[in-house]
Amino acid sequence: MGHHCCSKQKVKRGLWSPEEDEKLVKHINTHGHSCWSSVPKLAGLQRCGKSCRLRWINYLRPDLKRGCFSEQEERIIIDVHRILGNRWAQIAKHLPGRTDNEVKNFWNSCIKKKLISQGFDPNTHNLLSTKKKNNNNYTKSSIFTIETSLSSSSTKELVSMDMIKASLAALSTFPNYANNMSMPQYQTSLSRLYGSVCVPTTTNIIGNSNFASTIDYNKQSTIINEKCMWSVTGFETPQHEFGNGHEEMKQEAQVQFEDKNCQEEVLYKVNDLHEFNHDGRRIAENVTFDEGSDFDFEFMDSELVPRGIFTNIDSIDQLAWDC
DNA sequence: AATAAGACCAACCGCCACTGG
DNA sequence: GCCAGTGGCGGTTGGTCTTAT
Image (cartoon, rainbow, N blue to C red; front, side, top):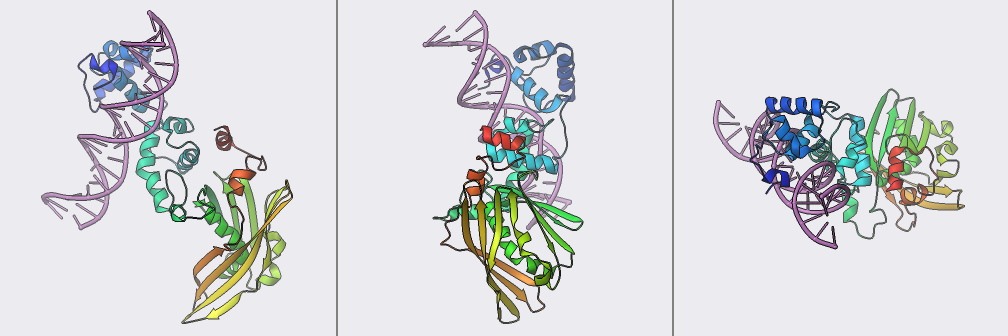
């Protein structure tokens, strides 16, 4: 059972031949396509109008961009999909020269698998592991883009709110990162969506073996903007334990979130456990949050942003707010 | 080298919304 | 309001190519 226009005539199906393409292109270039159902007859094609339309839109249109998707296009697809879901036509509108079919195929063949391999549910963009946890406040965790720069090298990866929590916790252990690296400067920036909005945070740590004398803990505050601030407010002295060929270091830190808009301050406790091997290289890290903390990690995503705290909202964010 | 399995993607199918008679 | 025709969309299929065994 085909489309209405197809049922009336005997039509060819399957792949288009170059001759058919040529006929269709020639016809549309000279006459346009005011009514697709009349195109096959006028163009001398034994296809249904719907098939002609699809062939033109997905393959023959002159403004199509063919070839591999760029990293930026991929990120746009992920970001817009997070907001719109499987609305491929809408997503494709954000990618000039790409069709809904192309975006859909790319999603199903590449992005979906990539997200799954990174531990995200491609439908909800939540962490797969957190979905299994009951009584978890963070099941609506969103995907963010994190950009990390180490001197000349730069990497970008998708992260979840859970990972953001981990990197916030890592603020408390920057001295250890710095010690393990020979880089003169460690810089990390966290940004929502593709790198331009919402959490323009930058923390610079000057690496030095004698970190205590060179790091100004005040600079570990992560300023979201003049109204919001993350900061590490207190440290417990690291406790070292030596075992069979490795060393464990336990450290507790207190992280404060301050929202000056509503004079709200929230504290939560981070427990950080590091394992080092015999030559001092870190081999494992386990960051946990105090179960008793009532801090809502969705705060940043669901409360702060709609209240207009973040500035520099780009078109994708605007789209999110419009929906 | 042969075969199976998996990946990719163009095209099809079925549904829905809109429009004009 | 009803209905047929049409455009548009998302899900699915099936043919072809690539990779693994």
